[in-house]
Image (cartoon, rainbow, N blue to C red; front, side):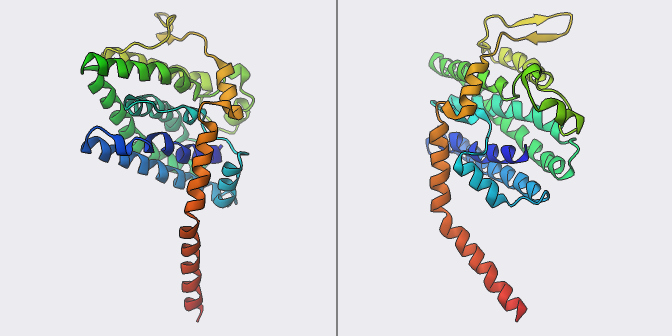
Length: 276
């Protein structure tokens, strides 16, 4: 679980990193660059947490590059317009916050402690994304249409991020028993939907769910059916960008090999000096 989370943070840099050079202003470029840098740090925190379980992070990265380890399905979707930077910050990081604030109280200490700092930074990411969407929604008709299009494309993948429904999730019961997870997938998904629908209404955007309705008795927004076939196809490696994302990570890993080798050589040199 921690390995998948760490991989997701690192792979999650790719969809947004693609837009750093195309940001519409210097301010937007700086904030997006900072956000991508934060995600790298989040991956590092969690990889360090896995090492407390006796796992070498290099082995985890090798598994990712070999395609035998998973990362969040959400990062296998393309970023087509600048509005996608807003949708990712608002929806994807918003969903992550709902998940991770609960993980900050998980039963495994190193994981929980990593989540405390990560959640603080993710809150800034969500605000950044929501501000982009609000600005576009209040702009020209073309800008508002761009924001709505991004919401239309990212809404369903975002609510799939919480994982399969409780009746179809094979690991939820065990994770709850060990208090690794504190709430089920459906409970967290409902919490996210309840938070996000009013936010969309506040900036004049429409959730792309024709049967979405408010249930007065439960005080919940009730979502329409989720296309779980799409979710499982993406998980199996058949999403729009699965191959592209892994190829980008392999390329970056190979191009950074000389840095890793230089760092190891430098550390070994100082160890020899210290021993002498």
